[in-house]
Structures are given as C-alpha cells and as structure tokens.
Length: 478
Length: 40
Image (cartoon, rainbow over all chains, first blue to last red; front, top):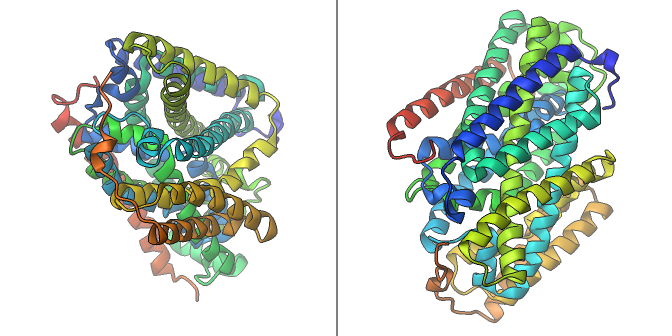
C-alpha cells in the first residue's frame, strides 16, 4: 500500500492541520490527567479506581485498531457479509474476558501484570515462557501499529511515511509518559466517542446516497459471492478470527492491567458492555465496501476502500472524517500497548529480574524511563518499514492461542499441573507454528489452542496439584 | 444460500442502531459516575 502523494484522498495541508490539532488535544489531555500522580499505582494503574464508563470506553477503544476501521471494509469486499460478521466476532474475546476480569480482581487485588499471575500460579519457568510470548506479541503489535500509522497517514494525506510514523508514535509516547494509564484511559474515552460518532455519521450519510436495496441488487449482479452465506473461506476466517481474538485478550497485559485498574465490581460489567458495543463497529465501518459495485467504484488497494468510498460519497469532508477516525483508532491502541508493555518490562524485567528491592519512588522514575525507551525501540524498528514485521502478527496467533488454556484453567481450576501449563504453551506454540507453515494461516490459532488444551488436561489428569488461591495475593501495593 | 435484501438491511440497520446507542450509554454512565471516578 505504497500510495504516492498524487493518490492521497486528502490534501497534505488538511492532513497536517488535522494531525497538529489532534496531537495537541491528546498531549494536553494526557498532561492534565497525569498532573496528580504520586505513586506507582497512580501512574501504572490509574489508582485502581477506574469507573464503568471509562472502563468500558478504554476496552472498546483499545480493541478498535486502525484494522477495525480500514481492514473491515477490505474484508467485506473480499469475503462479503461473513467478513464483516467474522470481524465483529472479535467482541467474543471481550465478552469471555468479563468473568475473568472479575476473578482476576478478586484473586489478585494488588496485582500488576498478567505475568504476575503466571509466576505466582505456575512458577518461574512458566513465567519466563509466558513473558517471551507476551513480549513477542506486544512488540510485534506495537511495531505493526506504528508502521500502520505511517503507511495510512501517508496514503490518506501524502505526508511522508517517516514523518507520519514519527508523529503518531511520538505523540502517543509523550502523553503516555506524561499521564501514565490515566492519560491512556482518559484519551481512550474521548477517542471512543469520536470513533462511534464518526462511523455512525459516515454510515448514515452513505445509506442516504446508496440504499440497501440498490446495494443488494448491484452485489447480486456483479459480486454474488459476497452475499453467499456458505462462502467456505469466509467461514474459516470467522472461526480463526474468533480464537485469535480470545487468545490475544486472555493473555495480553493490555487487558489484565485494566482488570487491575478498574474499581472493584467494575471489571465484569465494563468488559461485557465493551463486547456488546464493540460488535457493531466492524459492520458499520465495513458495509460501505459493499456499496462499491452500486457506485461503480474501482478500488486499487483493498485496505483503502473505506476512505475511497467516503471520499466518493462525501467529498473531502468524508475523507477528513476517515482520517480523524483512523488517527483516534491508532492512538487509542498504541497508547494502551505502550503502557501495558512498559508495565511488563518494569514489573517483570526491572523489578522481577534486576532490582527486586526497588522502592516505590525508584519504580515510579523507572516507569517513565521504560515508556520512553520502549517508544524509542519501537520507532527504530518502524523506521525501515519492513513489511515482514507486520506479517509477524499473522503467526502470533499460534503463540497467543497457546496461552488460552493455561490462563483460563489456571484462574478457575485448582488442580492444573504447573509443568503441564508450561508445556502447553511451548508445544501449542511449536505445533501451531508448524501448522501455519505446513497447512496455512487459518489453522495456526486453532491447532495451537487444541494442543495446549490437550496438554493441560492430560498432564493435570496424570499428576494433579492442589493450589491455594491465597498464594495469588501476597503482594503489597507500592 | 444468499442473504436476502431484508437480512442485509437488518444487519446494517441493527449494527448502526447499536453503535448509536453506545455513545449515549457511555456519556450517561460517565455522568452518573463522575463523582466516584478519580480519573479527572
């Protein structure tokens, strides 16, 4: 998707103006939200007092990435109705995490990271294996989002890739650095509202210009496959996406850190509501692609179908709105990943491996330094614009799906064998990766989850252990 | 098996309807919770 300046759907001047205005808004908001932060709990977990509205919005905003707004129309164009519906099933991960979030908050009232759970529940070997998976996934997602930011802004406005990528990454690092998780959650709330109002506005305007009946008639005539409910590739995509999403959410510290940050009693409701309200977004953002046959639009790059249709239907204003949406979607996910991956580095590498006796004040200073360092490393990895790094995300499915069973069973089942849980992650990942290369991308997550489940069940059946849940809450708040 | 025009209309309008409700619910929840929420 290497669009030259002439192909941009928005003028560079407009793009720069939007970029500057929203960058200033996020940084000022981040600074304002972070102005009263005295403890590590304040900085990394927003004081553990986040309420329902902000909790729901942050879960929604984080799960709405640039992919949701850009790839959903592309999937609708490639796989039709099931493409949109399959993407919206990403909400199942949020819904299933709702009871887990409640359980996590109850069992670990002073916990910090998902890796804390692995260490306390299964021991150091499982902890290190899990950390490897988490860092690989976290850094892969960060780099792919940073690159996506540069590529999308370049394609939409013609602003140079390096400048676009540096601005989006720099802004997110700056306000996360200034305000910690408070800034991330506060900006997420505003970004969620922008995304929701924006996609609904675009959808209603699009429907006024191309009715559903015209859309349906043109699709039946030119692309009937897109309305086929038995489209095999789309059905396979649907199941793979479902498992991949569950694996991503169950293991990632992005979601665990929110479970720790939400006020008591909020976690279940926030994740359940976020799942319900996230589900329509890929359909609302994606269905405009189904209007392309009715509009007679020729789409050169699949992932640009959303902005192209918006520009065709609504002119420069539509393209500008898509740009604002994409910027909000990118920032809301990038900031969350920066904060959550920094927490892992801080708690599990700095305190866990290097400075076990670090005081609260030292940890607070280190927290800011870690955010900055992670931002610099991500920026360096994004600079060469290696598309192969973006492709890494395709096979992270094998990694993350291997953690579903060790996490879920470990939270509810006392008897899980710790060595079995470790083996489940190692073998699930290895066999899932092998199947990715031997069979195809669409089975990696499925096979990894199946192997991991089998290993957990068999090892626990052969050598059950008796875990005392009180071992999960030994830590003191810093 | 092809999705009918009614099915497509339900899917699109249903999704838009739910997406319209979401920001209203979020704002109402925030308003109700604003004194307990220490974020601001």
